[in-house]
Length: 607
Image (cartoon, rainbow, N blue to C red; front, side, top):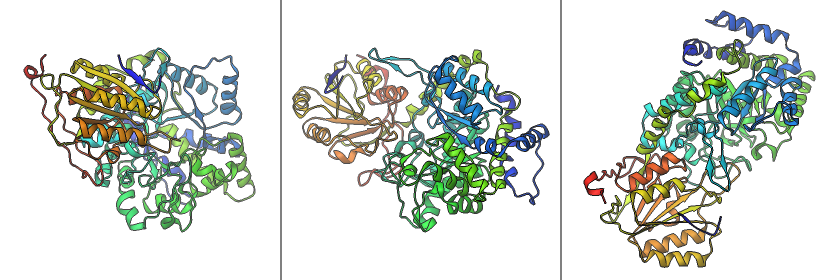
């Protein structure tokens, strides 16, 4: 028991999909440009038929994509009536679905699809796999995990493996599970180059800091997604990796010059475009060197039309990041931002604060001549072509009986576990503590730290460690743990052979700070002065700077159960440690470094 201190049908459509998706952008051409004929005449004809019959307001509605939770929805409820208004009265073109159990998500999306005039384009943030959104959650206070889609490690863990095959597999499995529940568009991969250790919002969501490696893995991820029936989205253009603030809270301003952008930020986007990525998501970030002003990229024609479309040659869908984020709403009203984003080149207005206000504003801008209706037609034609490429005009709902056959399968879990096992990285082991074998370690103190009071943080890790390293005392602390309580742990540390400190610091929106509480970091430094100490970070990889005297530093990248199990096995010699740093940890460790720790033979690790 842990003590707590301070808290209590896809494959058969693949070839047609690939042939069509490259043509989504052709409909955006000016009337005088010759278009390449579509290889699927029925889908092409459907696109033109729908475009011709839509009113201006209906066309603008197609460009709006509101957020929807994945919780259970009764058809006879006020909540359902509100959603029906989105679909029927406002005519939104799509939905971004959030967390919910797979069957509930699928049933909910089926209901909405049945109400829609045109098929809805359903998107989801599945950066590190379907389990990121297809997740039934946790029942408290019992700690019952309801399960769901396959949970993969974050992209930086993939960066630690350096394996394009695994990046492709992440895309493939995400696509299969997403399509099984009715999701068509994946807001992934994150192709930002995380070269700022203080970045509070990209961090482990990125493959790493090397533009070439990010480009290589991102292209494989795109291929995996799109060869198995979903639209991939490269984000956040033109690059969110060097920010020091969270754009959910305020507008970051990047002051680098154009040459730096060309050499660091843009290569992964170029690689994704070369791989045929269907969509690009804009960033709520100001780049004065690119625009000459502090207008966010999402609202800047110089970035979306000038840089992305004209210079990089991208002709697919441009999706804004959420229009409800602080990087937009702190400087621009809902109506103003919607109009500016469309004028800048956006095809999809993601999560506007008020749907009707956004639609009304864009319609009014067209009616007064500020936005040509032909500009709206280009976006809607792109969107309809995407829906045609996905065959949504033929079938828009999913078979609920198939969900359990696909989502969260044993085969998919095995791939996630392989990524986890190969991603564990030992940045340092100065005193040769690793592996922590039973013959050398009789008593251990394992301290799990969380900064957001997560009652499940480290549960799988502690249970696995107790099984693999008997005699381990498990303790949980957080930012509220008092100095007096930490002093008692310091005394307990003197009685053991080794102390394991494992911070679980999640990289999530609206958080703003991803450091360990200063008094806890000071405690870790004090422990490291007195006892052999192993720090294993399950999240922010840069926390080493808060206690640089620690002799052994291991990176497990995220809090997913597969990573917790993999870390416990690696630390105790049950599995090798082979990961390489996809980032640098200045000034202590360089990009590409990492120790290889061989596993201990069964005979040596036996009790």
